[in-house]
Image 1 (cartoon, rainbow, N blue to C red):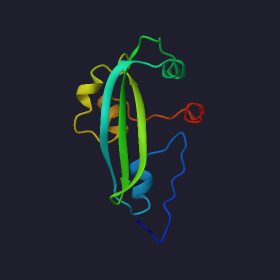
Image 2: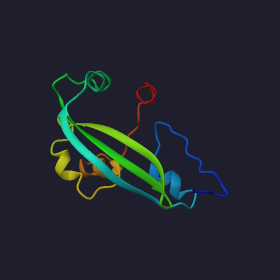
Image 3: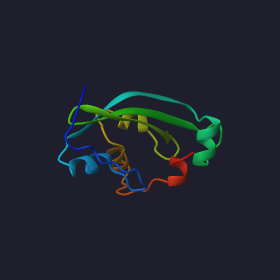
Length: 117
């Protein structure tokens, strides 16, 4: 059992940054990739991302920790057409922001409508 004197505050928004939000609370954020697969987008993913049904996406599943305690599991669907070679670039990365920086994207916003489907 894990217990903390202070609860972790983690509001999800269009500008959520896992590492920054935890570091601001003096917590050490870490992540571990659970797995990746590449294949055609599901009907739902294609619709939400505006892709064709045959579009290839890499699905990345990560487990996020705060001070070594499991906190969040995230699943990202990364279109290969938008991020060519994404599978190879994932090696050693622990943040989605780090991946985007490899494609020279320094900032991004989540679509809150997609977050609440």
